[in-house]
Structures are given as structure tokens and as C-alpha cells.
Length: 427
Ligand SMILES: NC(=O)c1ccc[n+]([C@@H]2O[C@H](COP(=O)([O-])OP(=O)(O)OC[C@H]3O[C@@H](n4cnc5c(N)ncnc54)[C@H](O)[C@@H]3O)[C@@H](O)[C@H]2O)c1
Image (cartoon, rainbow, N blue to C red; front, side, top):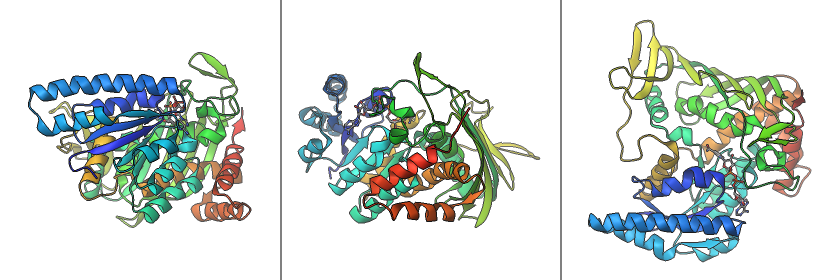
């Protein structure tokens, strides 16, 4: 592994790469990484991204040379000398052998786990966009790959890397909120845009069950839930769930001005019971997710000592964790660090690269978190399918029954996708 920076190979050069990830690699605080490979099935996209990144790296190199920044000059030159494009992921993995440390997976949901596992089996660390996978059975493969390969996986759930969210985790770990009692999450927007990639069904990947694993629950609940669930701390897990609403309200779904046939959930409401291993206590999590509207208050975390949220500190003007209690509101400071201060996307890359450079430390959103998060999504579908409150144990048993029928993991995962998304009411 390179000593001063992480060499990254990217797969998937579509919308999220162009809107967020490529900016993470050119962010002024991204001094610990450089991209050496870009891969997409579409040659036009990958060539366009090569042109953009080269131009940015040349501009940054010029600036670094003027400031006489030795290592940064070396890093950017290395990037410019090695950066190449590929239209085959397998060919890229072979071509970057001996140089690559980390694969950044920005492909649609169906490929998050398989391509990341392939990268880890090849000897690289891997990170992939949300949702973690198609369902919890899929994401187990990332946990197994971490164990088997000793490589690190990260789910790129960007909200976990926003400074106020990171500070909430610290504030809770320090005991300032006491035991968590109840979390409320409301997260929504008008629905996804038309991406580049369409599944075999002819639908954009966001609304093709076999490519997304589900609708608003798979697309938005990872963000909404992570903002309140991840701060509770490592090892927190869902135990049971009762889903009251799981339905499609809008048909056709209008995406980027075009109508599409859509059978997936665009509204979900559920009450989950979770367990916090730090306090050894259960808590309730009420989650509403929507592709039909947004909500004014994204979340609150009620604890023994008050209600926690993120607010604008009147003294410092910065957004930071606040605990509202009978004795008044208490604002807590953000952590100081060297990374991009405002945006989660560059921070998730910078912090993971920092962990890898310092003794291959696991990610703060490792495969274990990816699985815990995906369990929160799958169990909401499973409760609707079973038409009752269900436990994680029941879902595991159900998954085992399906797995027993198939010799290939992917067939099990696909059967689970079809069954879970088939439970969505068509309004
Ligand atoms: N974190 C966020 O806020 C956020 C926002 C938007 C999208 N996303 C997630 O990012 C992922 C991608 O979404 P998008 O909007 O960029 O989609 P997109 O279709 O615009 O881009 C995906 C790209 O992956 C490429 N691809 C697919 N399979 C491939 C393979 N086997 N090898 C190489 N390239 C392959 C496609 O050709 C396409 O260009 C989705 O899972 C989505 O949920 C996250």
C-alpha cells in the first residue's frame, strides 16, 4: 500500500459519481487519495470523466507546484501518470494490480455487493453507495468477505459522515443523552431522477426491483434512518418491526419529467424495536419514508435526559447536536478534524482513506453497519409480507428456507427481492 495516499479505482461513472464522488477526489482536503482507474460499461461516460479528472488534477498540480508541496506534487503526478479508463470491471481489477488500494463502487444497488466482494477477493478494500444491497441476505456477503479477505468494506452512507451526525454519536457515547428511548424519522422527497442505467425490464434502476431491491424504503430510508440510528452507536440492531403502511401511491411515477410504470413503495410507515448494546436497553424507532413529499423535521432522538436533534447554535451559528431538556437547550461542539467541513460525500472518502492509511482500521460504516442498516429496511417489507409484527429471528428463518432451495446466493437474493417487493400495496 502506498505510504502517503490511497490509490482508488472507481466503478460506475453515472450521476452520483459526477454529482458527488468526483468532487470528493478533487476536494481541497482530499490530500490522502488519488484516482488511478475509471470504469463504466459506457465508454462515452468514462471518457468524459477521464477528461474532467485529468483537467482538475493538472490544475491542482500547478497549484501544488507553486506552493512547493512535495508529497502533493508526487500524489497528483502519480494520478496523472496512471489514470486510465476501462469498460470491463474485471479488466480494471487486473490492470491496477499492485497499485490499487481501494475500489469506489458507484453502480446501481444490484451491483453494490457483488462488485465490492469481487474487489475484496482481488485484494483491494471496497466502498459502495447506498442502499447497502438488495436486501439483508445480500449484505451478509460483505460481512463474510471482510472476514475471509481481511479487507475493509464501507457503505458510503454519506449522512454518517456529516460533522453534526458524527458529533451526535460522540455525545451519545459520552452518556449525555442517557439511554435512548425513542427515535422518530421522517424522510422524503419527490422521488428519484432518471439515471443513466436501466434494467432489463426497461425501467430506470431506481424503480426496477431486481436492480434496487425496493422503492423509497431502499432509496431514502438508508439516509433517514442513518441520521438517527448510526449515532446510537456500534452494534445497535433491529429486533422486530410492525409495518402499518407500505404502498405505491403514484402511478405512473414521473421521473425527470417522464412517466414510468412503477410498482414499488413510495410511502412506508413502520414501528421498529431496536437494541442498544451500550446501554443493554431496547428502544423504539418510528420511521416514515416517502417518494411523494418531504417533511419539515427529519428526525429526533429521545433519551432519558432530553430530546436530541441538530440545531443552529445561537452563539456559534454552526449546526451542531442539541439536547432539549426541561432545564433548557444544550448545544454540543463539533469535532475538529482536517477533512472537508461541510459535506458528507468528500468526508466519507477522506476518513476511510485515513483509516486505511493508519493500520487498515475498519470503516466507521463497515460491513457490519451495512448489514444492520439493511436489516432495518428488509424487515419493514417482511412485516408487510407477513401482515403482522415480525422479529429478526423469524426473518432469518424465512431467509434460510429460501436459501435451502437454491444453489446460488444470487438466486436466493432475487427470490427474496421478489417476495418482499411483492408485498407493496398498489393504490
Ligand atoms: N448517496 C446519495 O445521496 C446518492 C444519490 C444518488 C444516487 N445514489 C446511489 O448511487 C447508485 C448509482 O446511482 P446513479 O444515480 O449514479 O445511477 P446511474 O445509472 O446514473 O449511474 C450508474 C452507472 O453505473 C454503470 N454500471 C452499471 N453496472 C456496471 C458494471 N457492471 N460495470 C461498470 N459500470 C456499471 C452504469 O453504466 C451507469 O453509468 C445507486 O445505488 C443510488 O441509490 C446515492
